[in-house]
Image (cartoon, rainbow, N blue to C red; front, top):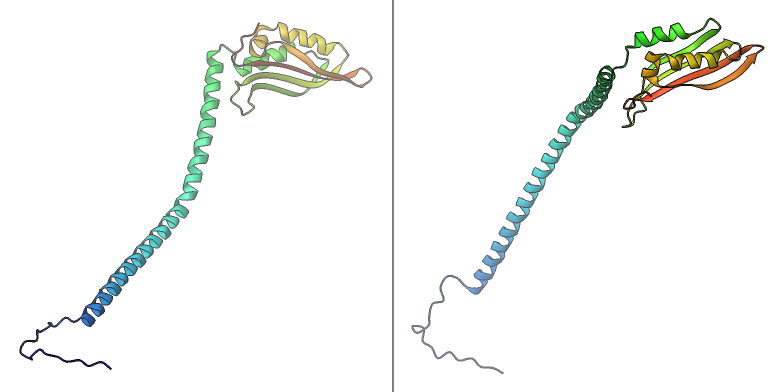
Length: 196
């Protein structure tokens, strides 16, 4: 058994003040809860602001994405057109005859025994960064086996045609029926090459 005796007089007792330990603990808990509430609300406000910014950015991207795709397509087309213009200017500066002059020379060298089905004269591009190729390609039917060989020789000896596409080759020749043969003649020269 414990016995407590208080020897202090009431007048000698000290006043603790208004803040007791219980009040201090409760106020500390309140401050901690208030601070946590402020931090959580600030985090929620920041998250909501970032979500709104993300939505605005997505809407802007969806609006501008077709315009950007169209701009990229236009740039590619512009680059291709510029490349073609550069090649045409190079053709003009390279001393090549105009196309109508080349076709006139071909017309003069074609014999009566030859029937053309296809005639190509121009610049052949493969789409790569390699230089373009000047091409002259003739195909059709002939009456007689050696007509294509004679025409090949005449076209190669023609200075305008030779300057344009170099030597003409007989790419293919075959009998169609009787004395009628099919043929393909072709001359190619890269843009940088000079005819020999």
